[in-house]
Length: 436
Image (cartoon, rainbow, N blue to C red; front, side, top):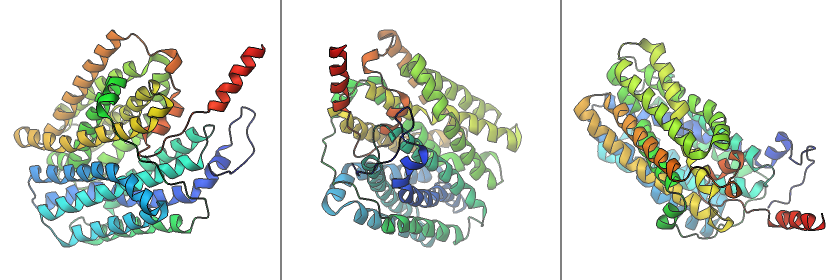
C-alpha cells in the first residue's frame, strides 16, 4: 500500500475526502479520458449510419471494440509488468487519441473495424492501469468509497460525453477532434501526479472452467450482460435512427440509459445483500426483459419523452446486473481466487460483448430496428430463467461466504489486482474470542 495515513471516523472508516485524496488526480484523468470515450460510443454508430454503412457492418465494428478489449485484458498485465503503470497509461492514451482522428479521415467499414479493435485494446489496458492503481492506493476500509466514486464518475462522464455529440453536426470532423483532444488531456493529470505509483502486477492465469465451477450464475450472468450491453453500445444509435429522424435522440437515449444504471447501482446492490444475489439478478433480468419488450412495441408511438423514460428504466435494471454477478462470484471466492475471478469475469463479459453486436445486428436485419431490444429481451429472459433454476437448486448463499455489496463492487470493475483480505484482523478477532 501507499503508506498514506489519515484520521478515521468513529466507525473506523476514513472520511470520503481523505479516502479520495491520494487518487484525486487519477480520477480527474479518468473523468476527462472517459468523456472522450463516451463521445465515441454515440458518434461512431451515428456517423456510420450517415455514411450508409450496413447494419451488419456497424455490428461488426462494435464487436471489434470488444474483441480488442478482450485481447487487452489478456495482455495488459504483461505490458504494465514490463514498463510500469505511468508509461503504459501514456502510451495507450496516445494510441487511443489517434484513433478518433483516423475514424474521421478514413470512412470505410474495414478501417473502422481495425480502429475500433485498437481502441478496445487501449481502453482495456487503461482500465488495468487505472484499477490496479486504485487498489494500490486504497485500503479495505476505504476501498468501497474509492471504487463507488470511480464507478459513478465512469457512468456520469460517459453520459456527458454522449451529450457532447450535440455540439456539432456528426457529419463533420469537429466531434472526432474533440474526442481526440479529451482522450489526450486525460493523460495530463496522471503524468503530473505526485502520488506513489503502484507495484508491478503479478501474472495470473485465468481458469474459466474453475471459474464456472466456483460460480455458474456469476459466470453466465457476465456473459449475458456482455451480449446485451455490447449490443446496446454498438447499435442503440442505429435503433434510435430507425424509429426517429431526430439525430439528437441517440445522445439522449444512451445518456438516459447510463444515468438510469448509475442511479440504480446501489439500491439493487443493497437488495442483493438482503434477498440474495441470484434472486436480485433474476428480478433485474426479468424487469429488463419486460421493459425491452415495451420498447419494442411502444417506441414508435410514445414520442421523444416516452422513449427517453423507457431507456432510463431499462438502464436501471440492465446495467447493475454485472456488478451483482461479480459480487455473487466473489461470495464464493477465497482470497487466492480474487484476481482469477475478476479477470475471468471481465473476459466473459468481453466475449459476450463480441457476440452481442453480431447477434443483434442479424436480428435487426430481419426484424428492423426493434430487433435490438428483441435480442436483449431474449437474453434477459434466459438469464432470469437460469438464475431462478440456480435459486431452486441452492436456496440461499452461505452466510459464511457472503460479502457486502459495497466491498464486492470493488472487484466488479477490477481488471488486474484485487485487494487482499485482512488476515491479521481475523487473527486478532480469533485471539479476542479465545480470551473471552
